[in-house]
Image (cartoon, rainbow, N blue to C red; front, side, top):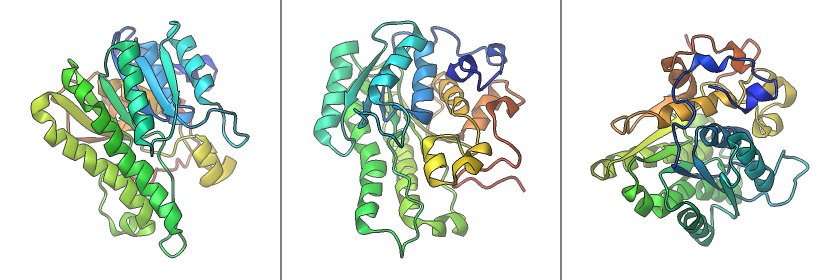
Length: 300
């Protein structure tokens, strides 16, 4: 798969390593995404737009923030440039906690592109790796409102369109349900938010099965070199041992190319790109020892 990371020199991987889904694989399909101004969400949006998808993003970053790269406006421009199609992406400035903003997002997708084929949750996710004794209730509430409630609210709002789509899909960026006491007990508030997203998605898969809508989770095997990792998980040292967002973008494209019978599963990005034929993950970056992501047990 080709992608933004190849063009700007951060990934020298040949586009021939994954032949499918190729150019035009998602032509005419509309993807609604929470977040997407930067990092993993932007990488996924670019990868799907390059293959023909239309993108409609909901994000809060209207004006530049010195702590974070990009805004929703720069993301829309980058997606359109990568797709080579003017108007390939539309940005809606809003907050995932607002039902009115979600309604505007869904209405924009319907008005602009005629419907919604894919709902991607939740690049707006709140990272709260804080022990129970230290987390404030305000932070706890934010974690649940954005992560779990946001996933439910956006999926619910998209559902009427997904029912009419030929290939309706929900993709949630949340982890496999690892019930190891280590992960359950490390930061329960964040665990509940992320596992709640995964449980909802497994529930959607079961509930929507007769509607022909697939629902799956996607999660990075390792940490990903994003602003969140840089700012919250260890600075330059942490990002040095993290893979580039392109691996999540490639994995998302592979997942959306699967038949609708693939539903109710939690996938790791490396699992999907390996299944698509990539044997060497080295070009995705990350110095040894690679840092495995939260809720993912490293190999024995």
